[in-house]
Length: 514
Image (cartoon, rainbow, N blue to C red; front, side, top):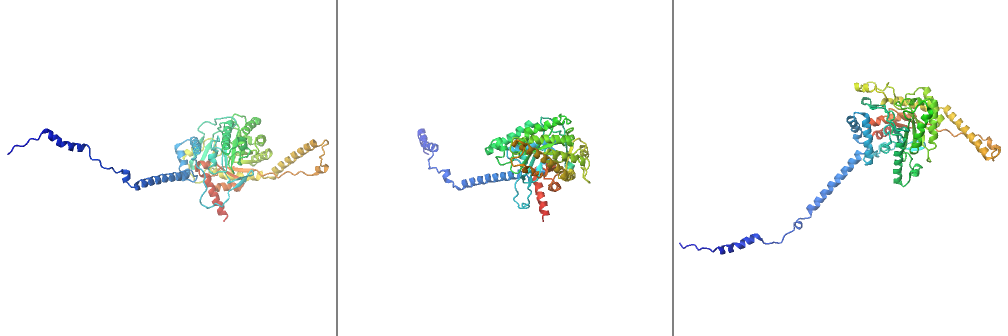
């Protein structure tokens, strides 16, 4: 065999060099763009899916928002009230939490509100009423106590009531009675409270209401004075067309109730501070939790007190003066007591009466066949004023009796005689001022004309106590009240109570018309 020929080392490396080089620098082919290679279909589909998702999310959020902020939502009645009772065993803590929540939700525009129904059912039934010459959309009001310090009047108006009452407010701040001072009786849908008119004072409430007016004025381009004088086309208190804001006032606890002049000064101070921002001032002389307050319902001190309030209200610095009402106790139900109150109302010039408040009595508040727990039985022994559905019968009876007494001819004649006397004095003074001898320029014949007093207006009655649904409201209205007021029913029934009451009233009225 021939010997193998040796390959030079240099030749070996020279032969492999191109392979290594080729591997290190591969051949460059024209690159095809990934974007150009893909079709436009997947990109459009992706964008469409994103748009559908965002739209669905927005629509879902809108639907949830509309439902959650509608007073007819299920959970406003069946979830939130029992949840508050569970989370806050103390009733006052639950009340404060509810007020704070409504205040914050209103500031975020997330508060519950009444929205018009899209269904035509019962839509033709008219619930509007005329009170103090003002046309109101419905005869439902929210009583004082829910908004003690005028923190959420607008949030309460949004629930559908035509009238909201804030307070009661005392001239100077006071803590009220020691805690605990509010108790639930769930088996009766009742409450007992002995707050004792806890108040931040008239100056504090006036500051809050003044700021509310100024904020409203900015939205319509008017200053405070212009708004209060009606240039915005809305009532100066409610700041809403067809609505009224009531401000309840009371005396301080330390003011001696036997000193009528001192008591009157308390109320007059509240009028001076709050009168400009109220459509109606409510004089509370019926709280059962302020010692001696109900003693002011006797005819003589009540007449002096109410006269002082009416006189001061007529001095209020705005074109339309606030009306004045007095809130009377359901426990002062003897004929003599009621007649004394009616006499004071007519004599002082008060415009109306709010019939009812909480009661000290514990008889007749448990329906037949209804059992309550031992704990609730103990709760009923607590000192304080009770409110609940079983108060309705007493309220209806009192409204009927007050309506009859207030419309009695004897009181009307008393007022007419007083008006005639006042007009005669005014005419005599005018005649003496106009001539040297006291004889009118028109001659003696003009003196023979008989002066006729204008017909006295009927005193207005608002009713509160035991009203929980539309049927209850119709009962007090048919008894002679112009307005049905709700408090405890709202606590247990939730934010949709007023809306539900109006729907029930429409159904009842529609059925009775067929």
